[in-house]
Length: 45
Image 1: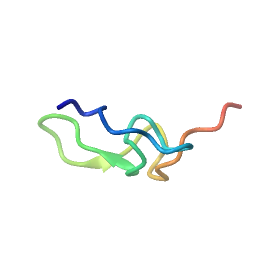
Image 2: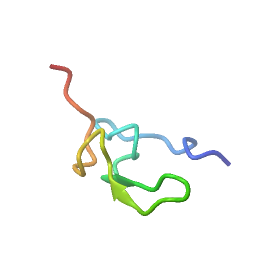
Image 3: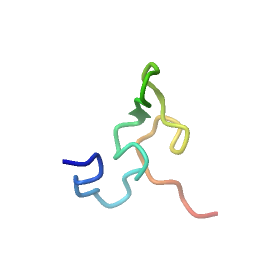
């Protein structure tokens, strides 16, 4: 069972899967650097 088996909802950040945070190995939980804690996919600018 991999981390990315879950189907992403439309507009969810693919990095943290819409949670708004992630937990890298051996470190504390931190705000997702890709969506900055919003849990939403970044808009293409």
